[in-house]
Length: 214
Image 1 (cartoon, rainbow, N blue to C red):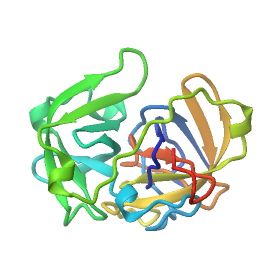
Image 2 (cartoon, rainbow, N blue to C red; image 1 turned 180 degrees about the vertical axis):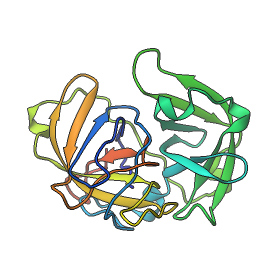
Image 3 (spheres, rainbow, N blue to C red; image 1 turned 180 degrees about the horizontal axis):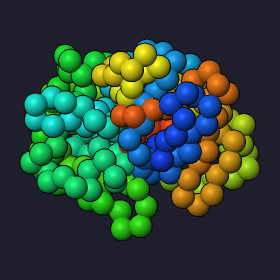
């Protein structure tokens, strides 16, 4: 799944069938991309920006959630993905496939938001030192308004697909249909959606190639 220069983090995802997915602005539950594609469909991300969509794994390489790099040393994800883990148990992987990552970096600190499903991970190593072409993304920091209703977004993640496979970075095309102060609701119209393992990945919006993604 993809992340533009500003990203809304996926939270409680439902409907692996691709019908509806409810996401909290910063966080997400155990879920994955269904009928997704290796390239974004609604945004114009460069390869460097696509590298900012990452996955969370244990030291043995097993991946279980998604996330986004917003600084060479900082990744964002869903709080529920990491609230029971110590930093030494958690690693962040970069690359299109979890079986052969471009980098697999240790986490030194975990910061959980006190009220919403959101977590900040400080890496023990600089991701751009390991993968120089990486371009971190910027969080979208302004409140949503009704102009967002109907916008076509991309969600990025490494979760399960319709055929129960996982471990690939995929993008799903979704429409933003409603929002409140903590969540956005997106609809894949029965064609694409989110599933287990996509939790913590970004929702991305970019109107044209000249405008930085958010």
